[in-house]
Length: 87
Image (cartoon, rainbow, N blue to C red):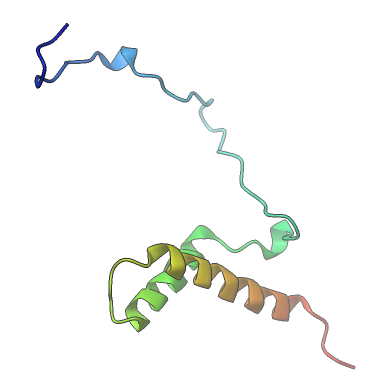
């Protein structure tokens, strides 16, 4: 057992890792009520969240809020595009 306050060297093979087959992407999350066609990309959400960040003056500390506002905004825009025009 190492002395208190000293770092223990670990072998990489001792660390637990999640294993996935190569070329097999992680399953995409699909929230209820959102069809794959209207699912916004991670890059689009990140870009929109960054716009919210800049609009707030670049103040750090509300990254989750920026992300959720961006998701909601892009979903609303997607819903408007998928609706048929009023007759």
